[in-house]
Length: 113
Image (cartoon, rainbow, N blue to C red; front, side):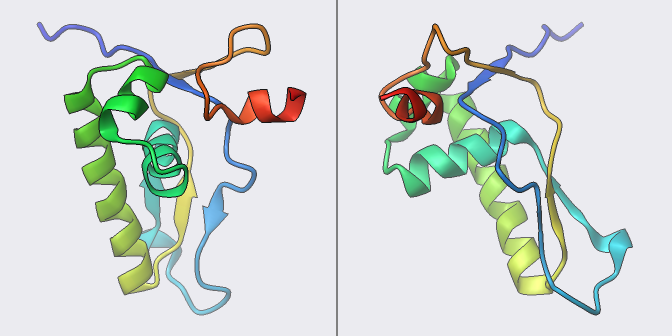
């Protein structure tokens, strides 16, 4: 029996969770990205954190962040190259709260500073 998945700490849900072509797409070809995959893209590609720093902020192992990141990048590429809609939802995560910011690059912290 596999051990239960550890909840990944996420700063905030994305402001928009649907992206893709404006017209002429097949809804059966939608790519689903989880919220924790989105968070790794935000931390590594947008904020410039290393995988180690991202792992600490998300409260998981670096190897876990690496595998989440690889899958997220694959999904982004599929969506862009094939012109398929991307929907961000689901996954195993917990949102940090206003009293316990998850790190230096926490989006919630920026709103309070």
